[in-house]
Amino acid sequence: MRRIRVAHIITRLCQGGAQENTLHTARLHDRGRYEVDLLCGRIVGGEASIEDKAASYGVGIVRVPDLVRPLVPWRDVRALHQLERLIRKGRYDIVHTHTSKAGYLGRWAAARAGTPIVVHTPHGHVFDGYFPVPLTRLFVRLERRAAKWTDRIIALTPQGVEEHLAERIGRPDQYVDIFSGIDMEPFEAAIRNRDAMRAALGYGRDEALIGAAGRLEPVKGFAYFVEAARLVCVQAPHARMLLAGRGPLERVLRAQAADMGDRFRFLGFRDDLPDVLAALDIFVLPSINEGMGRVLLECGAAGVPAVATAVGGVPNIVHDGVTGLLTPPRNAQALACNILGLVQDAGLRHRMGMAARGHVAPRYGIETMVRKIESLYEELIRAKSL
Image (cartoon, rainbow, N blue to C red; front, side, top):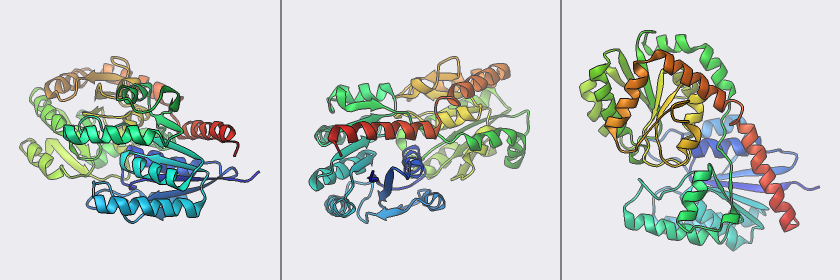
């Protein structure tokens, strides 16, 4: 039996849930059954890269020079032709695209190249919090068009399926929900290393350490976290805040948090995120829009309760009152109230953290995710008689 050729396409390999998901999928495919290439553009600006991690895993990158995240029409047309040439040259049986921009151009290129099987994982959506309304509506129309070139669309949660169908993108039978898994192993060591990591960060056992992590851009809602932190600091003198990540809003957020001094620290990019998460008492996800919130699985694996906004697939991951607390988006006051509730009750924090770990560990492993994706591939291979 010949091996099936698979191309994963994503805009760039920066630090982020979609990028980690795509990289781990490419590296964990059954090499006896699949030949896998990863096609992407380059990192630009100050984003943290995970390309070194790809190299360490032995995952080769096929470069698409003009595949960039912003809308740049002349480069987008060139990227379309570059992708089509690479897909034809690679003679791929399956093209699996990831995220919005690469998803549209990659599926169009695959259709032009006559690829037998096309799969798309949006990793959430851009229907809220990313762009002005007219541009958002344009993206919805493009997604409707691209769905016609797609055999299956993988949503991260059942809620993600509903949100796409509500926008009349594709048909119900095109959808399947497969979670974005994580590698559990680093979190075992991180939990054992918790006290040492807190000491390395400069915090003692008596301080309540509250943290967030992600790309510092508007849709992630970190401005609400900073405002909530200010409210928490007034009522909880032992509370300390951390924010890990880089992005275009870093300077604005630093200015917003300046009056809190060293009670609110910016850590920048961290390649030891499991250790940082395990050192926390509370994790905060203040997003305006979130496909699933893969970092919520990571903090659950670290045994840390979450205070998160009830957007997208987040309620599928954070069970309100059990593994964490849910709050409305764009509401710093409500966010602060839930954070304070956990700051003031160490027993509740511990119970929720253990419940979060018990929920995540047996269900959301990266290997399970990849086997589900491969099962989907095999279903489509049989249907297309490849």
